[in-house]
Length: 270
Length: 227
Image (cartoon, rainbow over all chains, first blue to last red; front, side, top):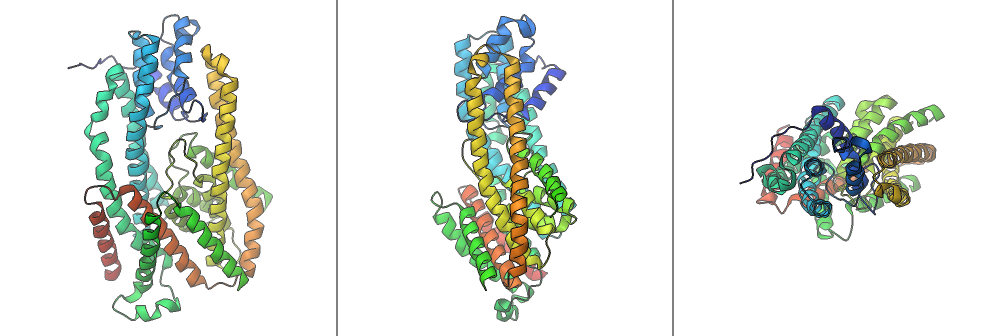
């Protein structure tokens, strides 16, 4: 079994890399994607190569690291850490480093998309919507969302940088950690439960005690004051089912835009 | 809306638009945050939050996945929040037109991000010889130029959107005669359907996922009935 190298990344270098990684996607483009950002983030580490900033190894490594690269922006930290280690170790040939970079793209993209964009982000958004539905004010809702989301965000970037640096070219094995493997599955269940819980409560708060005539009969029924909410949730469920069935063919927000345009025209025309 | 007010909102839009992708992607640009901040700037954080909740529900299906083209909700939420809090007239009509303005801005914003990425590509291609020499200055310059261009994109988009949409919204509110309760009900139904379908599409494949949804829904409804 490989023993990870415990040589630490110098604190100041790590800090510089971390700050630069926050701007990883500044020059994102369809040709090199994250390539320039990876080179930009790695640059503080490359200064430790023989000859420093003016040396040939520094320029060769920086040129290599600005080539095409694509991954999830947070998990790209794993690649940055690992590439810093292999560049400074000098044990790999340039062609090997190029192949290593390309090999990292796929896993770091798919794992990050599932864990963050499809898991952590909707989870924290729904926690905020639930807080709103339970009556929380603007400060609490916004603070709760930002603190919760960024606790995960920053932790993931720091973990990625440290793990990449520690394992270097053998970093692929660290992607099998339980959080990355099973996290998306647990988050998906939490998203489903939270969505079911948050939508009725948030809808009820938005509507308040509406005096809409359509709900008058229902309001006198067993459902009581929130009859309108249940009625609207039933309508929303029908539209939602249609959107799920049309997944891949129609974007929900485009349908919403169409409905809002029609509603606005109706409002002005009547 | 005065020129000073537009410029203030545009400044906020510029920083939040930058957060969408370029820096630092800490989700200050999510509608629930961006619209609340715009509301605070306009004098009512609560109104900003209400607009933000609507937009957040509509934005839930948008995943900022690398190469895909998607609506840009950061500046759009500033525009939506600003249009709502600076309203004169019926609040629900204002909410309707603020949502409409925000969604149109999000659509245009998505195109502007696509254009910016193409521009970044042209700059990178032009810099390839220097990049192949490992020129650190050029690398930094490309990153900084991309940041600055995104900041300008967001600023200009917010300013133009508000300059165009604020008078149109005021006119529409003054001439709108829709039933407020019905408008709010339709908006809620639309937003809830988008959010629900988004969560379902993302997560229904998980083990027992649909049962978790049904369980959460039952609990939410029970809490409402108990209220």
